Amino acid sequence: MGKKLVIGSSGQIGTELILDLVNNFGVNNVIATDIKTTPPDVIKEVTFFTLDVLDADKLFKLVKEHDVDEVYLLAALLSATAEKKVQPAWNLNMNGLFNVLDLAKEGHVKKVFWPSSIAIFGASSPKVMTPQRTITEPSTVYGISKLAGERWCEYYHNNYGVDVRSIRYPGLISYKSEPGGGTTDYAVDIFHQAINKGIYSSFLAQDVRLPMMYMDDAIRATRELMQTDKNNLTIRSSYNVSGMSFTPNEIGVEIQKHLPNFKLDFNPDFRNKIALTWPQSVDDTLAKNDWNWRPKFDLEATSSIMLKELSKQTVIN
Ligand code: AKB
Image (cartoon, rainbow, N blue to C red; front, side):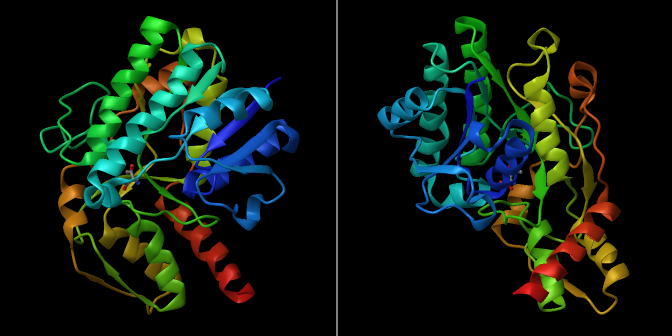
């Protein structure tokens, strides 16, 4: 068995994906890389290298020297940050992907995972139960880069036989690692602030509904997709996957069931405009049919876990 290489391993998804890969394949079969020079404490047992995915030579050497056969490319600038760093975001999100796809095209790695996002949809897409295939006119740099990336993944699969697999992640909720630079980040921040301050000011308006997913579901979806027989996959751009959908007001009410004094107010900023162009829910029938995708966590379960786990961290800190 070759090794699994995670690029962007210190981010919100990367940290938890590393833990899952270590559990399933053993610590000696996983390599963590990130542009940051030191890995987070929770993954410090794993072999780690500093890597900028735009450095194609260093990436190639790492893959060869460590006998890598699977790459998880998570390095990207997310929706809110990308609006402020337009060219760097486009450069990282596109050329990072090309560097990895080209390695697979040349036969140096067998399988690639690359995340897309609900951000590929835009204001003209249907909002409720957004289909797998529909109008996609994203209006953010991030959304444009993810949509272009999807087309390239499908192109590399169809023309060069590259085994690349992808999920359109919704907003992800986790306690082991924090998100950074996304429009859906409020749904993690709110738990931290509820515990630490008892009050949260949401940068999305109270009734903006977005698709979300608890991190355990997102990681399991990733693993299940990667382990599915390639003949079952009918989508080589990226799969819609559904977890739950809620508004800032609804998550606030859920938190108040645990913390009755929690106060929530609303100060929408530029991220609200982005959120208004995204789906409220997505239709993931193809993921269900092709690789038996089933979410396990709803808002109630997610809120209980988040509050319980973050309270422990507060006590320890
Ligand atoms: C973001 O908010 O930018 C991301 C995403 C939905 O892809 N979390």
